[in-house]
Length: 276
Image (cartoon, rainbow, N blue to C red):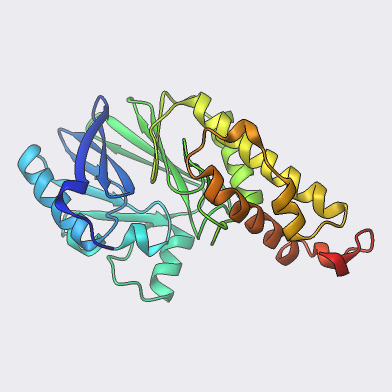
């Protein structure tokens, strides 16, 4: 991906937590007197811009860089921000995928399975794995004491989930989002795409996922095929989400495909699979 210089910017989210924007992508970072905790580099070009901007704006070095998950549209550029005093972090599944696929970025040297707490200069970041949801090894990062939650791809505020849900696990998206709403309450949510929000917006997003999944599942249980589902399912209470008109049919297709591929709806004896 290439982004124009005007598409790069840093925005203060709350206290010592900031959002870095590169086109349609976002990452988050935390600045302390002992150094900086970075998340996704996004791309080599974005990472070069960010490296210069951090050096100009803050007088402390990068100490940690954590990948949200394995997908290369968020992890490339890690080698630009890496260094002898930087610890690269990822969930074990994300680290494994980056190594196995020979991704051209800095490989993680610190991995974890369920949770990892990183303390830095009187602040800390709690990284948690919630199971499958998007890609491999996707985690949430809770910045404290600013109380900012950062999640990439499987929670998106103010916009529909991406197209036909490539690489997504709809079950996991619902389960993981329910989990973050049950955990330590957060004040502010920052995503890898779209808008900044709060608990209310995350609840609205979860309700859409649940409504989408339920509508497709129930329609398939009635023996309806994809074209019929796309013609009949509307979910008008979510028209406020950006890309609603363009991506709702694709979202339906993604859930439909999951129920065929992962749940074998076309092989169930209680459904006329020939019509699906």
